[in-house]
Amino acid sequence: MTERNGGDTERWKHDGVRVIKGDQLDPNTTQTPGMFRQAAINHARVGAQKIWAGTVSIEPNAKTGVHHHGALESVIFVIRGKARMRWGTRLEYVAEAGPGDFIFVPPYVPHQEINADPDHVLECVLVRSDNDAVVVNITDVDPVEKPNEVHWVDPLHARPEKFGRPK
Image (tube, rainbow, N blue to C red):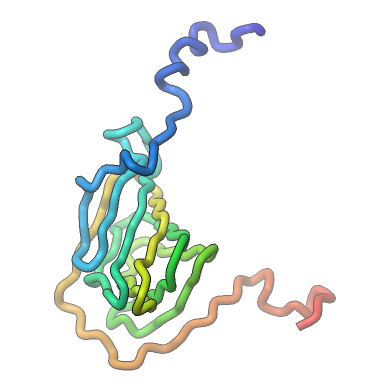
């Protein structure tokens, strides 16, 4: 096999693919009351330049403090449990996600994660668009009592009949 990039093959041995075992996650990352985050991928651990990835768990019936992640985009993948997300200036919107569902949180959106299951821990994988663990905890939110439920339908699936698909 020919080396295409000179001596890169030897360098890739230690600077290439990394496997972070589940029992090697780092709890020394910024936390929000009500949840427990552990870092798997970040600059300090693997040299990541553009992402942060890890896990988050929330105890049964618990909710996090209100927070946002600055200019970062976040993706949450639900592994186990039932996630209820509230967001907005007064947490006036709500949606739920279960195992296999993805949640997208845009930059600067105040939000709160809630474990909607009274018996089981909510377990998720979290990925952010930068390697900094930016968490801005917000303590002066006066949440609405009954948030508006949002059923998200992406633009491609908004009108199935338009594309010849059944409703």
